[in-house]
Image (tube, rainbow, N blue to C red):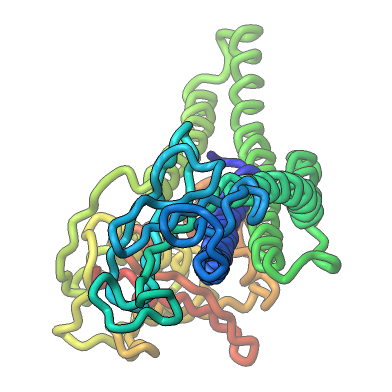
Length: 473
């Protein structure tokens, strides 16, 4: 059951049913105990009345079984639902009420004690019987006011039909009251649940209305319950991330189309020229074609590398790499360009400094940083590679810094944007604006974080490679 409304209603009905059952059982049995106790009290009172009546009959000498007629014998004396029977202790015949068709149970308790039990009388009558013994018995010297000291045993029964009718009415009252109150409670709970879930329905409607063109909207939480505010806060944060992601992807698609349009246009123009003038162009035309193809190939390869790194489709080996020789090997690929721009490399590294990661990704990472430095650092300056202790006490921070007077402080926020180029700092066909995003992706794939900072005072750009939280995992 996935519906909150149905689930709450089911649990409420189960709880209400248990409370109603327990309460109903308690009410029923408490009333039953009270009615039976009243019946027992009434029977004990009837025993005394029958005894008194029989004593009056003995003393008055009205016929009967040798005891003066046995006293009261009409059923109307105690009502149609009361039955009684008296046995003399001298062994004579018993006297009983006219509405009694069969003998009542005869008790033989100790003197002065009474017994009470439930029995089935003739014709299916369920009754409660009480018995008692009065007098000294057959051989008694005196008989508690009876002539000759004779005693008697008395049994009195009362039909329990009235008690059963009362209990049935109690049972029906419990059932009817439970159904009525339960039905009203269900209606009330449905109203409460519907009112309580109204904010959820509103949020659902707002979520359904979201599309790629409305990611800038946010969920209002002014009149929401406190329980839903954290959910709405997380939804708003998710919306912000989605908006940022979609904006970045739109910009990326636009930049990619713009980046590929130039070499494609160049190829088209050269192809059209070759068709119109097949005998012209020669080697220079084919060199231009090859340059455009190289540029497109550079973009495609960089995009494939970024996609593979961001999806994490490969498990990368982790090795302990000596940093100093690694930097020298990577710098050797750019040394010709560095010499042409009178750049020098300065290493502020201990000989035994090592870093953890994949050697191929480290070559890509340092290659992009040192390649950018070789192409865009101020002429005649130096490129510094150094290390410093990590701020969290885990590992070292590798820093690649160079003078970048043409860079502005606000440009730092865009350095890792795909296809971004500064107005003058980045130009030429050897760079497609994917180097730094690719470098950051290489670092993240190994558990490192790449961050950029600019020092306006001396115009130096610093690229810091910091150990990430998952580097040691």
